[in-house]
Every structure is written in C-alpha cells, then in structure tokens.
Amino acid sequence: MCGIVGFTGSAPAAGILLDGLKRLEYRGYDSSGMALNRPEGLLCLRAVGKVCKLAEKVAAAPEELRRSCCGIAHTRWATHGAPLERNAHPHLDQSRRFAIVHNGIIENYQALRKRLTEKGCEFSSDTDSEVLAHLIAETYRGDLLAAVAAALKQVSGTYGLAVTTSLEPGRIVVARRGSPLVIGLGDGENYVASDVAALIAHTRQVIYLTDGEVASVTPEHVEIRDLDNLPVEREATGIDWDVSQAEKGEYPHFMLKEIFEQPDALANTIRGRLDFEMGTSILNGMNLSPRDLAAIPRIVIAGCGTSMHAGMVGEYYFEDIAGIPTRVEQAAEFRYRNPIIEPNTMVIPISQSGETADTLAAVREAAAKGALVTAICNVVGSTIARESGRGVYLHAGPEIGVASTKAFSCQVAVLLMMALLLGRNRRLSRTEGLALAEEIAKLPELVRQVLDRADSIRDIARRFAQYDNFFYIGRGCLHPTALEGALKLKEISYVHAEGYHAAELKHGPISLLDERHPVLALANDIPGKDKIIGNIQECIARRAPVLAVANPGDAGVRDLGCDVIEVPRSSRFIAPIPTAVALQLFAYYVAAERGCEIDQPRNLAKSVTVE
Ligand code: AGP
Image 1 (cartoon, rainbow, N blue to C red):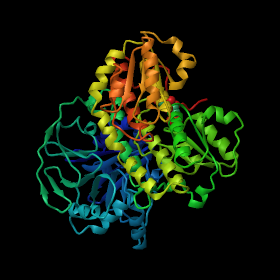
Image 2: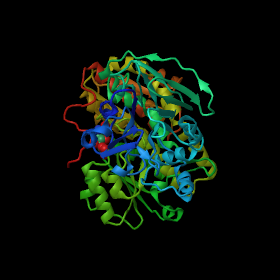
Image 3: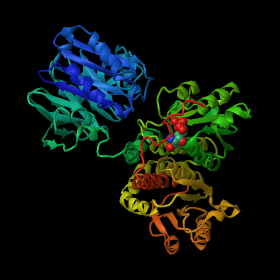
Image 4: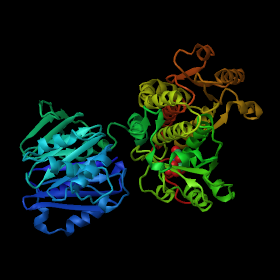
C-alpha cells in the first residue's frame, strides 16, 4: 500500500519526511518522493527504489532549498503506471505550483485526463493520480481547501490525499475517501500521514479523517470540512501504541494484518470491474476484444504454490461457467514438458510477486509458442506482468507475510471475473451473468463475516494445535481449497498437513488415520456435501478427530459430533474464498499456539526468484 507523510512547522521538513517514509517502508513500495514548499516555489525530489535513494537526492539538494519547513512525501506501491521516476509521487501541475501525493485509485481518471488534456494540460506520468494535481490547479481561486474540495467532487474512486502549493507556504490540505489519512497534532507544528506509524515518533495526539472530509493543516491550526465546505468538529485521539508496534498497526504479525485486510483487498480487486448492465466483467488490462475472447479454444493456467491452488479453483470456473477446456500446470512442469499450445490458446500465469522464476519461465515458453499470455499479478510492473503484456492486477496492496493470504482470495476473485467475462462471451445469459456479478460484489462482506468468527476459530485451533499430522479434504472447488489450507498450516506451523480430494482417502491415505491424525473436512452446503458427510463418518469410524467447515445451522454436520468452523453460506463458485479465509485463520492460530515464527517461516522466501 502507498504511504503519505506531511509536516508543517518551524523545523526543516526534509529529515522529518524521510524519517516518516522509513517508518512506512514495511508496507512495501517501489518508489518515493517529496515536495518541499517554499515561497520561491516547490522543490520536488523523487527516486525509484528504496527511500535511501531519495535521501541521497535530498542530501545533494542546495542547503537553502532543504531549509523548507513544510512538505509532503510519499512511498508508491504502483497500481497504474510502472514503477518509474516519472510515475513516483509527488505529482505537480504544469505550473509547478501545486503538488499532490495520493493513495488509492481514481476510477474516472481517463475521462478527466482526456478533458484536461483537451484544455491544454500536459501530463508527465502514466498514473491515475496526476489528474488530481491538474484538477486542483484548475479549481484554485485563492483557497487551497476549497480548491481541493471542488476538485474531489469531480473524482470517483478512492483517495488518501495531501496537497501543498507555493501560493500558500506552510499549508497542507488533506482529504480521504476509502484510504486512511491521519493528522498528528504538535506544538507549533502539525503532521499528516496515511498511517500512525509515520508520525508516532513525534506525537501521540491524532485526528483521524473520515471519508468525505477535507482538512487544512498549518503549524498553528487544523480545520476540517466536508466536501460541501461545511465545518466538521473532531476530537483528537490519544495513541497508546509503541512506535515499533505501530508498523503492524494493532496486529502482532503481517500475516494476521493481511488476513484482516481481505475485505478491503477484495473491494479493491473488484472495484470498477463488474458491469451490472450487461451482467459481465470489465477487465481492460486483458486487451482482448470480444472476437479475440470468442476465439480462445483452451486455457492453460500456470503457477506455483498458493497461486497454483488459485489456478486450480479457476479451472472449475472456466469449464463450468465459460465451457472452455482448461488445465492447470505447476509452472516448472509447464516450462519443461514441451506443452501443446494451439493458436489462440490463452495461458494465464498467476503470481502475486510477479517474479517467481518458474512462472516467469512458463510465460516465456508460452510466448515462444504464440500463446495469448494473460497474467494475474499483484505487483504492478513486475517482470511477469511486463513480459506477459496483458493481464489483470489484483490491486490487493503489498503482501509482506511469506504465507500468501489476501493474494489467494483476490486471485480467485479475478479468475471468477475472467470466467464471467468469457462465459458472457459464450453461452452464459445476461441474467445468469448478473446473478454471478452480484455474488462477486458481496465477497468483501462475506469475508468480513468469517473474520467476525476469528475468536471461535482461534479457540478451536488451540485444541488442534497438539497434532503433528493433518489431512484436509474437499470436493469440487473445495478440493484445491483443501490443498491451499493444508499448505498454510504446513508453511507456518511446520505441521505435516496434506490436502486430498475427499474421494481419494479410501484409496490409500485412510490407512494413516487414528486418534492422533485429525482430518479437516470442507463440508460447505454445495453439491457433494452428502459425500463429504460419508467421508467424515469413515474418518470418525477410525477414531480420527474431525474438524468440519460447514455453513451455519447445518445439522447434518453438527449431528456427526465433530468440531465445526462455520463459514457463511454461498454458491459453489464463491465458497473457496470465505473457506480459505477460515483456513488461513486456523493455520495462523495453530502456529501462534505452537510458538512459531509466523511472518518469516524457516526455509521460505516471499518470492522464489530462483529455480
Ligand atoms: C504461499 O503461501 C507461499 N508463500 C508460496 O507457495 C507462493 O504462493 C509461491 O511461491 C508463488 O509465489 P507467487 O504467487 O509470488 O508467484
């Protein structure tokens, strides 16, 4: 996620801004920048890579420039536009009198950019954010607060925003809708940031902006208004966090933070991509016309680990919803097996990091055979994204915990939207498409309901943390979900967990079952549940402890006498996502109970950039 820091007071701003950016580094980013406000004009410095690169530029700037006591700064996690210096924030209007730093996604930026360009505005970046600088310059009539409010009324999408202008030295205006923004209160100085971590070293008195609010911040004064310029009264909040703790917010681990970020991450993945008029998806990044889509005879999905598991769920989607023959390949296998790629075969590499060596090699093999390579990545501008040339970004924000959580949910959501698009390009009716689009739109709320049950999942996990072996079993889309759940438990708690198709147990694995070998069965109320019930009974008959995932009030499962984790009822296509979230929480709490190092498990790396 991008980071925002701002300062206005009587001390030099540059060092304070750099310190704030460093405290936001944990969020993941690919470039940074700052704008220092002086009566003679704005000094804007930007750098690709780590914050230390920006610090070098600040140190090289003339001393009098660095004496500015007001400025804004940013770490960028690229969403629109590759991680290049020209796309780093701050962005300036062409008079270079207005500077902005922005978190979020401006959904109507293309229309705004077109209008502003036709008016003569010259854009210097590929980002959505830059339109804000030009809009504010356009609406400015002598009051920055009013100008920002007027500009934001033209904007759809999300923003956490900080703005400064050389026409009003010492003043910063901030605003938020859908992306956090906090004001830190000092003595003769004030701060702004996207995250308490950036300012907690200077103050513990903060004011949280809420959506639709705009605030003016000077060294002596903070004024909050709504977009209609009506004043808003807001009490300051005292922060009781220690600065080191603030980097994860209130979470003990990044993994738990990212599990709980999933409603917002899914909302970002889905935002602007469902067409409720036509009952289809809007995935412009695929750059494929309806005719191109209709010509696709087959799909091959390639990935590793969690991304491969997401692809295995996608296989069901593409075949059931779009009627397209689909297979999933472990990316390393794909690259070496001399795969058969017919003209117009679509190959979908899935990779959160966009840097996994085997998946990148699969991209190159597919491209060499003339496939339509369409990537699903989270990191914008990553190698796999760039070399694929087309695809769909997750917009899930950086995933720092080694165990992938929100990426899985968002990958599955993207695959479902791709299947909806391809389905409506074939035999899926508008009515069927609309129903599916409405289900997809409800995913953030569905996941929120799972997260609300975290305490009960923790209590169950504590009881199962004693076991050193597990089977996870599921059917249909819940088979790959079982594989993913087992992987989560394996990689962070070091428990030997294996995922199996439920029907596979009696073909061998069941020989291992006894009272020391629990089975986690995915018994959601979807087709095949009655068979899972039978599998559960087979396990109980062999004295294996059983933990079932089931929908609320499912007596058929509860009557079996096993432990139950409840997840909200949904269709078979939707079930993998809330179920996976429950399994992520289960794995997390087992690992916590076993005292494991959760964010950096032994032997693992976040991105496997080697074969
Ligand atoms: C998932 O929890 C693991 N960290 C690992 O399996 C991961 O999914 C795999 O290495 C693929 O990474 P990618 O999505 O960045 O390509």
